[in-house]
Structures are given as structure tokens and as C-alpha cells.
Length: 493
Image (cartoon, rainbow, N blue to C red):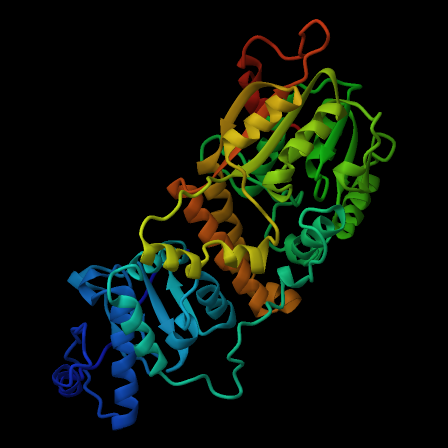
């Protein structure tokens, strides 16, 4: 997640000692001696219990890289006199209870979306708490003590809903039917992409390209990096004037229009989002490209069996396909690619987690339910296939794997650019979609940036050839053409 913060934190040594003698204090916290307050006994007892819970959850103050600010401005600095990477701010006495009772990734994320706590500073760094908390809960004895401690904290006031919120934004669509059926996939995709064109326009690039950008130096702005990404993909496909291009999951049509303008192809884009299609068609008409490309609202499985294209591309689509559907997805892409043609698949890749050893870690892993936030709030039914599963399914469908490039660091940079733009546009974003959706996207972008930066997930462009009867694929012998004159090529249009 992201970074910063600090105020002053009063001592409470008298009540700390009382708690220690009673046996209720398991993890002492070292308080700063300045600005001693004299709160009521009840409020002081609540604060003491919150600090005890914080010690069980986050470790001793001297072990932390972050600071904690309580609802009454009491403040725990980072230990060791080092600057805090960020400050965790609690909105009230019930915040920790609402964040962690019962402990789960979804509970924690929902509390952030709802505003029970916030992060001042490096939100991306703060997302590391997810994995640290999960690991801490497997420590012998922590789980029952933590639950008892949290249960002793105040419940939320009646005016604040105590249940998990059904986020007012992205993933509120009710999904029915068989997972990854055509109808259910359409509902899942629309729940994310139809938050609204006005929303996406506030923080995406000019072309509304919603996938990993390509940074030739690392210093480019998002408009330049997305233009260079589109150029890079078109070069990898070795597009030629007059060729027919299919873009599966074309989004707002940025790549399709770039390919038509700069490489002279004829294009068809398909998307499941009516709003994306409406925007894409408007841009196609404005640019005078209506005779050379079009966008349809259609599932890739609904394309005619006899339809074939010289080149096929799919960017950010395979994540919605589902692991069990990968063979059918690549089989369909194979049929859509003419013999001798090329298919480029660009998508986020994950890994299949090994079984967690030990009874307690397995229970914690099941209860914590990693990935539940993304499923509930962001990408319902989304699955990140491992790269070897992608390659295996492509080969089994008949493709040759001709080139694989991973762009992991590029996606971390992309997400950081997006989040910076989102945060700068907060007032406009909340006016369009509300504060919960703003907080949802802010958290999701920060968490994903950290996942890419740490290598937990990756993104790969896989160039696949369909050999003709003579074994020929329309690709050159080397990659030299990809980079020859790239600076000049990327600057076109």
C-alpha cells in the first residue's frame, strides 16, 4: 500500500502497571513521557485494551516500521527513533474490533473501505501488513488472546453499520449461474469496468488504456508509457498494412485505433462492457476510422467458427477466463488465428500456493482467506493463471511459443502512476463514485503495486505462432526489428 506521518503520545504508566499486575497485560508497550493526560478510568481502560490488541497484532513498538495514532490523538511512534514509513490512524475505540474480529483479509480491507482506519503516508508499504498479520496469527497462543482482547473492545455505535459493507462501487453485481459461463462472465466484467467512463477518465491516460504500460527509461509519464506499450505490442505482432486484426477484450479501443492509424490494419475489437464499446465507437467516429475498424459487445466464445484473422491480440483478458477454461480459450484463439498468423496474449500471472503445513497455519490460512478482497470488491471471479499453465494450454491448442517477455516492474510503475493520479483527483472521483469506491481503488492499486514489486505476481506478453502447412509463421528470425528506430516509432501519432 503507501507512506508517512506523526503527533505526541501521552504516558499512562499507572494503568499500564495495574494491567501488568492483574495479568491482563501480555505485551507491554513503551509510551512517550510527554503530555500526560488524565482521562476517565473507563476511557483509559479502553485505550489500554486497544494498545494491548495493537501489540498482539503489530508487535512491540520497537519492532514496527510504522506509527499508530489513536482516535484521541494518542500516538505511538516507530521504535528505535527511526522515521515511520507510514502512520496507521484509528477512527475510534471500536476500530480494531471492526478491523479484526474475526481476523480475515476481507474484514481488514472492508474496514479500510469503510473508513474505520486510514493510512497516512506510504500506503503501498502498509499493504505488507496483510501478510505480516497472517503470519503473526500462526504464532502459538496469539489467536485466543487476540480474540479475547478484541472481544473486550467497544462495539460500533448503532449509527455505524457493524456488518461488512457491500461496497458501493465495483463488485456489487449479483453473480448467478455457472462460474465462467458467458452470462456470468459478462456480469463479472461489467461490475468492474462499468463503474463509469467518467471515473476512469479521471486517472487513466488519454486513450483510457487499462493495462500495464511500457517504460523505456522508467521516467515517462503515463500517456507516453501507454503509447509506447501499444507500439511495442504492434511491433511484436509485426502488423502490416491490410492485415486483419482481432482485439479480444479491447476495452476502450486504444490499442485497436493505434494499430489502425499507425500500421494500416483493419480491426475488430470485442468487449463485454457496453460503456467501453460506446466510448470506443465515439472515438473511432471522431478519428474517421469507421471504415477500417469497429467494436462489438461480444464474448470471444460467440465469434463465428469460420472467422479468421491474420493477427490476434488479447491484453488483460486472460485473468477473466478462469483456470479451467484456459484450454478452451486458447483453442478458440487458435481457430481465430489464420495458419501462419500470430497471437499475442498479455496478462497477469500468479502462482498456485502450496498447501500450508501444520494444523494452526492451515486453519489461519483458511480463515484469513487471501484474495477475498479482490474477489469481493474488485475483480469478481478473476483468476491469475501461472505462466506455465498459460504456455501449456497454448501449446496443447497447437500454438508455438515464439517469445515471452515479463513486465513485472513495468506494472508496479503503472499502478503507482495511476494511484498518484487517482489521489490527486480525489475530490472529483468522490463526486462521481463516492468515497468508498475511491478508497477501494486506492487500496487495490497500492496492494497490487507491492505484489508486482515483490514478485508475488507478474505480467507476461507471450507471442504465439500458428504454423501453416509448411511450418511457416510470419515472424522474423530475430527481435532486432522490435527495437530498431523505436524512439521514432513510438513518437508517431
